[in-house]
Length: 543
Ligand code: ACM
Image 1 (cartoon, rainbow, N blue to C red):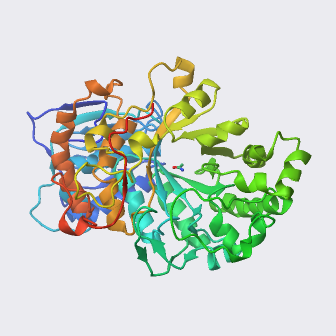
Image 2: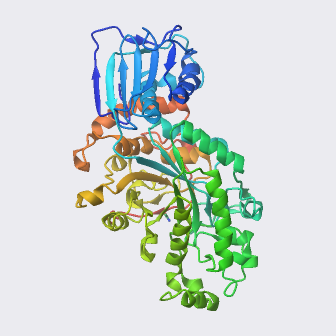
Image 3: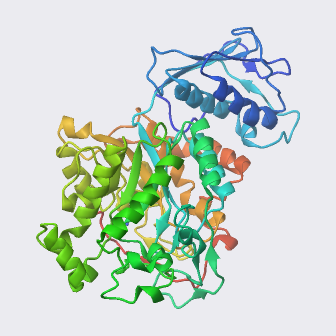
């Protein structure tokens, strides 16, 4: 039935009558599965014009949801016979099984209302047994470079859930905008969430969008996003990027910057792209400020669903620190070998601070440079090397190398590709991405807790542009992250079979209203002629 991601095992029995989701179909939710029942009634119900009222478990024509602790926590067994039964090792497993059931019901099950009363609601008899390869199946959404209104984030969560992805890494702060309300520091959003204008295209472009850009999530918006994600068994990882990528915060509170080397009072929220020299000053004021920020962040993102807090740590130029007498004196007082070690000191400080509060630090692989705090995890983005080093040192790793799974990178070498950035990474390239590099020791391989696709939005100014970059490649990524059936050897993967299943999946994406890149290339309105990108020609992956 063209399932994506491919399940572990799947056996059909076409010899007997299919199950039909009829007007009399009832839904029985055993204890612990009430949320999944709510989701099924709210999505599949209206799409197929069926109310799915409560009824007895196991009755002919019914759907039954139940937790079976003998299954793996996120695993499920879906049986379609005279009745449907979805067993999961936990509510999450039942939910992933329900997602599979929705795929089996056909693309119409992805609409918001029933477009055709005569649509087929038949599902062939079959048994699907399944469980994920990785526990961290993530996507980063950069809401700092371009703000995604709350409703777009909720929709994005639905799209992740439809692909059995279970981590949303929200990049909430950067030079170009601060996106989360912090009550004790209101200027972070009053001033730090707005920029006067925006570079269109790569920073080398001459073009500007002169419309002020901004927006932020209130604390209730964040609580809603976290709760909506939790109902879909998705964890949200907040990222507050320090000590680089901080110009928006410095624009709001100039005392956070290196005031003895630059007039921070005149710094605006940044309006262009790249690695920014304006980093946080290594003062007690800065530490207390960010502890205050993080106290509110921990309150907004509860430990149960957000055990990890991402503190960035990437791309932090040390030039201002080495030029700053105050920063140099601070480094000396801290016993560091020089001001260049202040990045590691920042990260270690907040790693301890988080650990004291029962949370775990995760950061970009640059945090390896300063020595990883105990229990810290690494997002390996500059290639596999950081992840390999961290895993061999006994740290958890999420593999998200930019050479493979940065979805801002162009997906075709053609001239029509909108604002082409980086490497060409086609649907097939993503399908052949392997998160666990060969040669890792078995102990280190077990430290690769998952993988993540990263969606940086410098050149994605709208939801449609995000859709275009993310889909269809996220479907291939989802199969990489989930499917235990995919050979570890990328060359051995059956891309032709995936392509065949994609023809059904495109119909699901159409029903969902996803503005994906069509297989034949961008539609005229999806092109951005004249907007300069930064294609990297023929660059080999630096693995
Ligand atoms: C990153 O792409 N700077 C993590």
